[in-house]
Image (cartoon, rainbow over the protein chains, first blue to last red):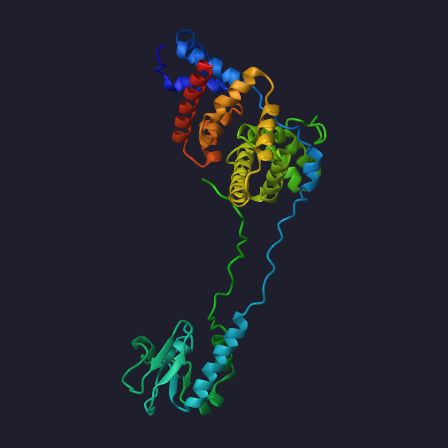
Length: 209
Length: 185
């Protein structure tokens, strides 16, 4: 017997058996069957296999349903207390110690209103040793050399200086507004992301070959 | 007039899933009733002999526990077949491990053949069963999913974790083997 040369139609025979073909395709397959002995034989084999129902036990639906727990509505993840607040205060405390302990080591000046206090730190002329000053995004080493500044733009003189901190003693001379801004800047030092990633629940996907 | 949920019998699987998620336990009964026998037949066709009901139950329990991840991109039945097949593979691996440690008893072999004899009574059915046993496990899965369950090649590929092209090749080889087997008998 000659083999079928129309593989596409041959592969549709199971669909013909399950009556899942649309009208046009069904007509094409039936017309092909009329002329193809190989496909006729295939269809007969498929009918035999489909008709030979393999024994399967009757399933007790209710017993299965009893094992299924009710659907749990999606519970929004409980917001954990933010650690960033505490970390901010720790950073602020370290910063304050560095400022107070330095005693004239660090000078803040010419800070534009939009920039943080920490980013406008430059070395004090009378400092003899370097100071490590924390910044929001990194730790910056401020050398004792007065010629070296944290950044040229930060050190550029401004016509209207808003904040000048020559020594810890000068803290008392800061206005209330400056102190509030300083505290806000310290409060905003977030060393960690403000939000933690959503918990990932591992799902056993089983094996697949 | 729109029929009430109690009287509607043409609800899609997704509609029933949504009803179950909303707290309607009867939707679960409808879904299990709709698909449980197909799962049992697939397990039997794939060679499972014992514990088919337990297997079907485990399939549904696992499926309902993961229904939030079911997006309806495939049919629910295809998805259930996929879960059931994985469970069958897990079972076979566990049985293989236990056989490596526990010697096979003579009574086990007797009960195995006895169970198989009980599965198919008619002579024609017996011939079909033997022809299916001549196939490789993957060929048998592909062939029974295609012929007995009427799944498309795309759906079969999803169930067996393969490609449509590979499913076509498995089907083609399987029908040639089955045809030759039945012709020789």
